[in-house]
Length: 490
Image 1 (tube, rainbow, N blue to C red):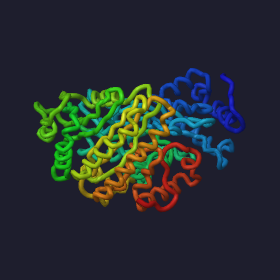
Image 2: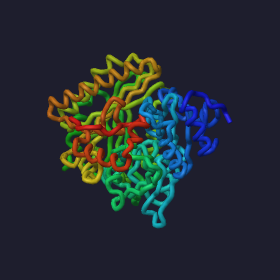
Image 3: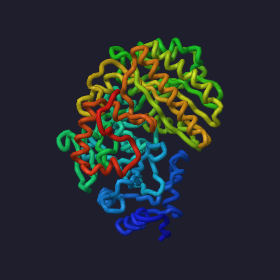
Image 4: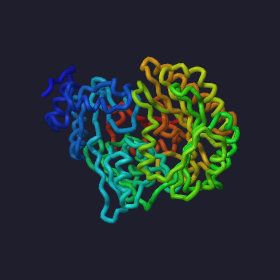
């Protein structure tokens, strides 16, 4: 066994965990398993925060043993903010490791099993969406899951989940039949529409504040191939883009088989800003869908269409993630897609380039993802996101940022916050602002759960008090977004 380094109760904690779970499930610095876990991060901002040891459970029982150990005196004092639950999908410092702390790495919980009638697929939180699609496609089935290979089922679902199938089925979490959850006292419970319904609703947007999710049951549906298209357009087409976008995303015009993203993108490697479009139609067509025809008729420097499977799209999505970067993160804002607001978003993004384009390895992309009522209203009364009182289409606007030098992190964060602030000001001045902050795209400095509003936050506070009265997952787990302690203002 590798020697345990560190001081005090933290080193003792790792020794206790080894005795409890075995050396094969607790890895220490310098071991092959430890180094492999660190190197599995795509971005150095996570790997650069090495923990004292890494716990890798293989079963729900392993998670139970770990959670029960949290009540021991090695981690029960108020200053013991040293537990991090690592899942695929967290890319900011502290989200995957904590210095001189313990990481619970859920990657071993990646099983994928079908119900006897194939109506449910049960996935471990670290099963990836590409693996789920590959399991389902030979059966002629799919789920309303993620769009990027390598992202875990748990991370996306607990934050809501935007899918190519969202206009047909809602948020990913709206398609969950049940969760298996290990609570703070070590008990294992089922949460569904019939059992622990408050927990079932709270997990849909409430993230990892209530326990460790060890299984997610997703409803399947019949699905064949999809139509896919992509274009790169010159900035000179911006007026046409805003006119077309604002028209076709209106609730009365939205085709529920359609999903698309329009973006403004700059890469230092390419050096030329462009407008990008990705189109998906969730059934195969012999020709381009009429819904996208106006976009496809615009002048472009690149255009491609094909018939694909959901797994193909997930693999393609992963190719767009910057590789070997020091940092990568999102920031987000929600607004109404009026034509003036869409143009303001472009203008804010274009103006921001002057401050960041000299940053080495920079990518700086602002994407506009339609959020019609077909997505957010389907389960609005039974999830935590607080959108039941909205009407009309919204847009989730996400700034994606990547950079090559760790020294530029502070500068990128400042520029990101400034851009979001300018977008917020523009949206308010144009009567287009919505306070909702989509959790899966939120920057570390944003408060997505607070954006759900006081009614939803109040329910989440009550749920936390019931299932985690000792606030284990609030006080001992520093990573992720937390439930505000009091009233919120949006």
